[in-house]
Length: 146
Image (cartoon, rainbow, N blue to C red; front, top):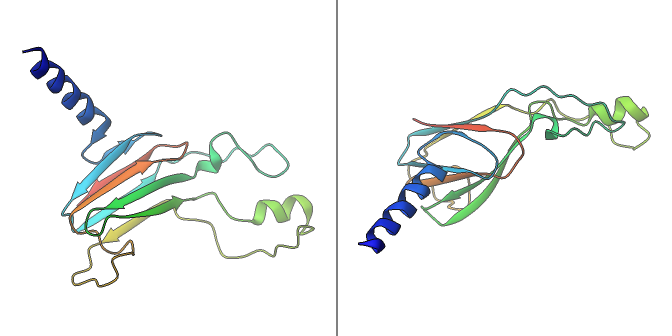
């Protein structure tokens, strides 16, 4: 009887840590199964850069995740950086780093769409089956399975 109680308690604790989509805090995981699309969005956190190079305690509002896909047992890193670019370095040292201004601001949201008959299994495009997201960053990230 004790074994059943312990196994049940471990199962409930596992469900609490690994929810079915929603907002995941740093260190937590969530998953989607057989979704047609998955929306991943970092929480809206202001960039409070007070230091010379723009470093902040909240990683400039960036969301960092690791995505595991059961379709091919592949792990892919995913980073959302809505307040992230290299302009802060150029503004502070006036380009003395030698890095030119490139691109645009990062994205706060990305939608992964299922691609039927997708042949490259090592890509993020294959979201068939179970897809697990683990928040490896410092900011909350929301995941919606559609």
